[in-house]
Amino acid sequence: MKQLLAEKSGIVEMGRRLKFVEVVAVGILLSTGLFAPRARASIYTFNPGDQNKTALGSGYPVGGTLVGASTNGYSATSGGLTIQGTVISLVIQGGMNPYGSGDLTFEYLLSESSGAGINDQVAGMTAGSFAGFHTDISYNTNFSGQIAPTTFSRSAALNSGATLSFNWGNEISPGQEGDIIVVQTDASLFGTGSGSVFDTAAQSGVNLLVPVPEPQIASLAAMGLGAIFVFRRRNSK
Image (cartoon, rainbow, N blue to C red; front, side, top):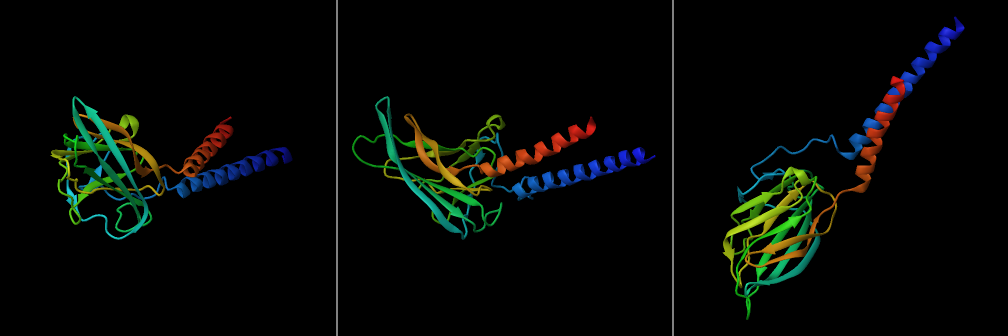
């Protein structure tokens, strides 16, 4: 009888330990924000695989703090046609971001220079990597440039929507600039990534400011899922 009671007591204790570990593991997952509520999709929301959607104007960004800025040039020649200019990247934290008060908004201003030898228009640019992040994309109508974009695209789910594409049907001529592109995200960190500017000629490898993943979140999520899997497997034996 004592042995039976001891065995039952051990089973109960194991169950308690398993329950505790599962609670802790789920807590870790919750702390990473994986189960955090997200903003509902809006007219500006782009999911992986969304292609050639009409570019919409907005008043964003509203408020927030400038936390990053960079200016990088591009230059390319093909078939005797040359594009040359700059891409300005800005990063705004907070403000009226649909994903959270501390999340990041990215702005891109594409300008085509004027001068001798620059004889091609610019049709678009790309920015990446936005893989794994939510994105709302629009162009700013309050501080507009000279040429409004016509369509936006996001690459397919196969690569988690890593690349955003901004296209100008009415191309940007030498001496002109496009309207400011606004990309609101749920990212909290940023770094330097790669983009491109294109028309007849194309320049890849243009440095841009883009969101970057949080390694600690990924490792904590793996720990939480791993703990649940291991202890459930042990308990099933």
